[in-house]
Every structure is written in C-alpha cells, then in structure tokens.
Image 1: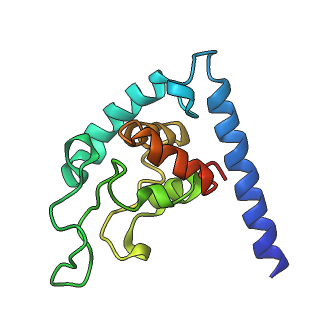
Image 2: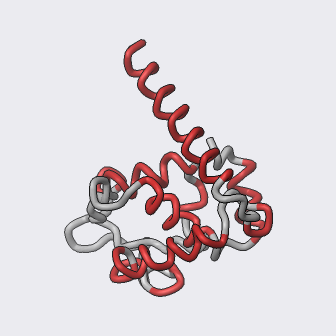
Image 3: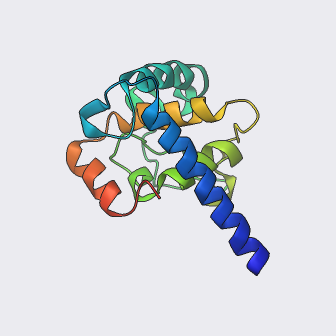
Length: 147
C-alpha cells in the first residue's frame, strides 16, 4: 500500500516537473494564459496528424455516435475538442491514456508510450486543448486539471 502511494507521488512529482519545464520552455508566451505555448500546439498538430487523426478526425472532433458501444462492446474514439469527456481528466490521466492506450477505459486506442516522447505527448494534449472553449478550459482547471 505504501509502495503504491509512493509510486503515485513520484509520478505526480515527475509530471509536475515536466509541465513546469514545458511552462519555462524557451521563454515563449503561453496561449491565452494556458499551460502551453504556440510552438507546443504546432508540434502537437503535426504529431496528431501522424498518429491520432485517423481515429479522432480533424479538429479532434471524434467519431459520430461515440457514446454508442460497437458490436464488440468497445467505444468509438470520442471527441477531444472539449465536447466530450476528455476535459474531465487531469493532465496526468490524459498523458497516461496516450501512453497506455484506451483499452482500460473501454476503447481500442493503442498505447503510444515508447513511440512518442514526453514532449510529443504533451504537445498532442496542448493541440487538442487548443480547441477547448475558454469555459471548458477553466472548468478543467477548476477540477484540478494540472494535477
């Protein structure tokens, strides 16, 4: 029990350091006061086009009927643009889903840990969060989004 809690604390600390490092970046201003810079969004757009667009579609809009299970019981790719539930998850969970895939959450998304760097994973998140309206982003922050 203590070992698991210790590992979760280390993971959270590492994520905080990673985000803090991204916030420092190269002195670039953040996009509309958000945690990411425009260069992160630009990199995220490229990584998204190479890895995510085939399932989550353009502008991170997801698939039609994403709430309806497929015949095998799995769910289609949801929107990531702020119109579905991605904004309910803190940054660490979003990153973990990218790394480990969506199977534990009832989907079919493969994991990208080992294919994408930490920088690319955060860039993809910054890209799809760039579609989130201000009210959704603020609600995400209020839910502890950066934790």
